[in-house]
Image (cartoon, rainbow, N blue to C red; front, side):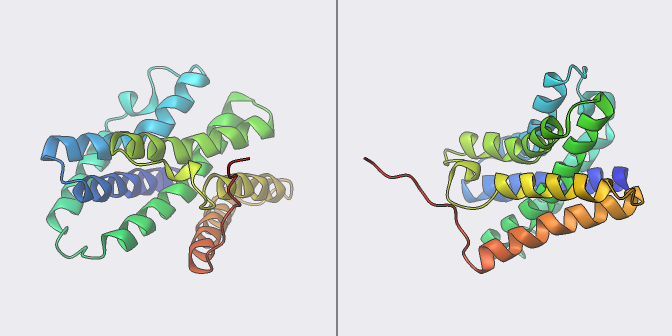
Length: 200
């Protein structure tokens, strides 16, 4: 289940990157680079911080294949993905839920405190999108009013709360990712935002 979620998250973020790049009218190479950094940016930063080198995607070409597959899928069906904003949102949300879990697990494997594990989960989920948005000349979504990184933190808290009850790992992963995805969908549907800080 964990490996499957990892693959799903990688493809989802790669497609999210492609859709963002298509909106910016980049050339094919530019679109692929955006897809790549969106999919592995957060995980690369996480691995460097915990001293896991070479980083994950350099040791397993499955990630490169999945990013390439997501890239080709999004390009082939780009005309059918006419509602790019909706498609981008859905794939980004799936990646958010899955990559939070991956970061949490990597922190646990390294023997880190739960608070640090939650920080790693949030970083894994959000920083690929941060790099994507910066390269596409956008203010990263994590820094805007939308509830984004906060959802990852909530998901991490739910994860450790459920882990306390010794649930089956597959159930734990599934429930945590569904909580993150559901809160994200509800936040957008009902326009839940964090307050902004204006000028003094």
